[in-house]
Length: 312
Image (cartoon, rainbow, N blue to C red; front, side, top):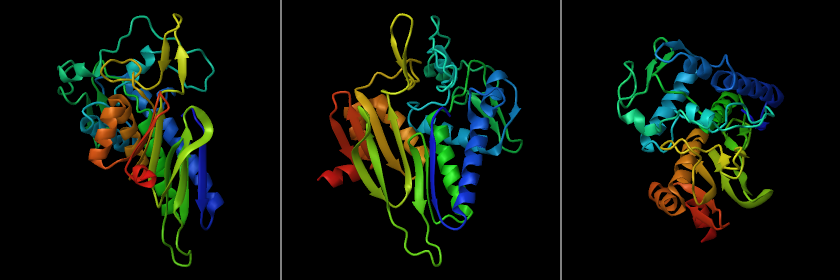
C-alpha cells in the first residue's frame, strides 16, 4: 500500500489478534494493489472483456466503489488506473524509482463512460460487470481499475471488524492515516473509553492542528501536499486525480479530514470534497451533516459538524 500501518488492540490475546490483523492487511494488499502482477486488480486490468475470478472481498470492495462512483456524481471514481499510469504513478510510492508522466496520455476522462464507449460487455453506466455467484469481474475495453484510498479505508474497516469478532475489547487500525476504531461492551471488561484522534497540520507534519473525541467509526485524510513529483518540464503532479480530466486535482483545499461511520466512506467523502473546492465542499458537508475539517492552501481552516460545534 506504500505506507505505514499501526494497530492498537486491547483485550484477551491482543498480541495474537495483532498478528491476525497484520496478516489480513498483507492479504488484502496482495488482492487489491495494481502494482502487484498477481493481484485481483492487475489480473482484471490485463484482460478487459474477459471474466476473471476474484476473491469475494474484491467483489465487496468493487460494489462499494461503484456505489460511491454513482453517489458522488462521479467525483469519486475507481476507474483511474490508466490516468494514474499516464501521470507517472505506475509503481508503488516506496519502490524508489522516478515517476515519469507520459507525453501522450491515453486516459479519455471519466465522461466517456457515459457516452457508450464501452465495448459490448457493459452498458453506458456500467463499465464493469460483476458475477457474484461466480465471484468474477469483467471490465470493458479502455477501463482500468484503481481503488486507491478506498482500498486502504476498506482494509482498515475489515481488519477492525475481524479483531473485534475474535474478541478485541477495543481496537484502532491505522493504515497511512486512514483509521477504523471503536470499542465494544464485553462482560467484565468495564465501560469502554472514547478515542481521542489528533489531526496533523498538513503544512507541519507531526504537529496537531486539532483533535476530536469519538466512540468509534472511521477517519480519513486526503492531502495534495504529499506524494508529489515533477515531470521533465517541471510540471508539478500529485496522486489525487480529477476523474473528468485524468490530471491532478486543482483545488484550493490542501487537506481534508472526515469522520464517518466507516473508514471507506470517510475516504470517499475526502476525495469528493477536495474536488469540489472549499466553498462548495463546506456547503455540501453541512448539508450532509458530515464532520469535516478542511485546510486551505492559504492555511485557513474550515470546520463542519463536530469540529464546528467544538469551536463554537
